[in-house]
Image (cartoon, rainbow, N blue to C red; front, side, top):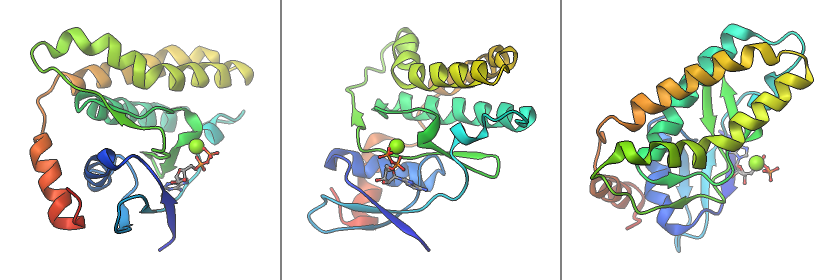
Length: 184
Ligand SMILES: Nc1ncnc2c1ncn2[C@@H]1O[C@H](COP(=O)(O)OP(=O)(O)O)[C@@H](O)[C@H]1O
Ligand SMILES: [Mg+2]
């Protein structure tokens, strides 16, 4: 197993452990005591940005963007800001996009009173850069015509996931990280 080190903020570690278990981010392989460093199992595959080439596989891209919509919607409903989500911070394992590079990530306080009113904030915060880079890359290779379908698929899945109830509570995420990794 190849590992890669990262140094996200300490408050992120329980969430990153959870996202690894869900296959949304890379799996954690070890946490260094003191919690400044964490090692991830390396996700294997091309970066999403590398798929934007002349003979790109449109079907694969649609699947990837549907899955991305789900994954980014999932992190958003927990109040997780990736901080630097673009096409080269996504590794595509087969058809499965793994969100990597959590060095800029942070946690925003979430109000669950009216989650629907937060949708556009979270859509912008976690998706704007990714979608903009995607559109630019597709325009560059004269494939801009497929962008609207990618964006629609992504946004629909994002909204569905964002508005669905939390699967596990924040407290459970902390507790699981404490028992598995000794953090929190
Ligand atoms: N294949 C991978 N699987 C899991 N995490 C990765 C992978 N590649 C990079 N990372 C994580 O992302 C961080 C930044 O790496 P990368 O995005 O490749 O470089 P940069 O953004 O500095 O150009 C690394 O410190 C590592 O934690
Ligand atoms: Mg990066």
